[in-house]
Image: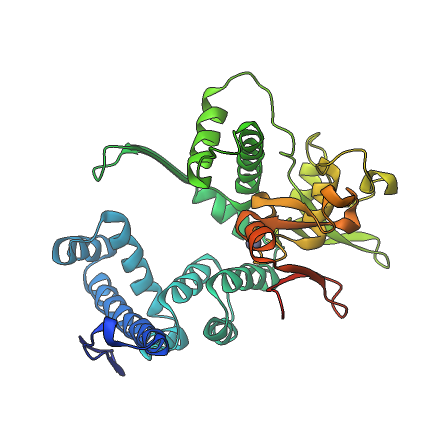
Length: 372
Ligand SMILES: [Zn+2]
């Protein structure tokens, strides 16, 4: 396959994958990634130009007719094409294959939502993983916002959308919805609490897959009208307290997503919200041998301290509290003997001998492969 970008070009020569070395396969993947970016830049330029000459709707129509793209993809591609017309640095990086398409989409979306520093984001996009970069973009949006992120949150609330339909692919019913980060965090927290409840009631010899468990949790939450809330559904919001000014600053969700301070204050009145200033009694954090599983308060404190899985950074909603010194050999259910880990990283610890390590300079917990 040979591709030519709008200005630059990336060439991928045909090769027999089975004949490549391990390093060769990775090298090949790298070149394919560059070619995909260059091709995406070309597609964006063409669709952006059709949208300019005619309108966005006609450009979408063209993407669907000519490329056979599903409606959703066509709309997304045209939006990218329109946004990239004003984002020179991103367009060039994409065209040169120096920025993955997914990163470019994040910048384009942020630019549609408010002012951004394009060059700064483009530099970060070249070196960060998608997940890291998504965080960088969210923090940057909060940093440059002139109204503490209120207009961004309003915009996101307006953009909420949901749909229920029967898939033409396989006849299954699909629920899909997008929410602003605050509503979303509450939903994610309720769903993962339900997942933990289901997990505890499962036969360990016949566990469902995580995807099946999520589907069951959503179905139970929607269909079960008993009004019982599974424990651990509290929304975690944290903020810094500026002692000099005597005010709360930098409010954010448990995973670090910035939110306006007003939202924190509004929600701190809500009975189910554990508010920012975290003053749980010290003995609440040290349950010793009295119970094996972490309490809700400990989970909140862990979410605040670890920010997510200490191995891979997955959101606290998808993590379990893990005993550093195992419960079986006398380990205590104390905050300093617990870390948050996701399911996958938990397996690394139990099956592959990965070790929890506390980084002396940052004070943060980390997960390392054995022998490192
Ligand atoms: Zn993990």
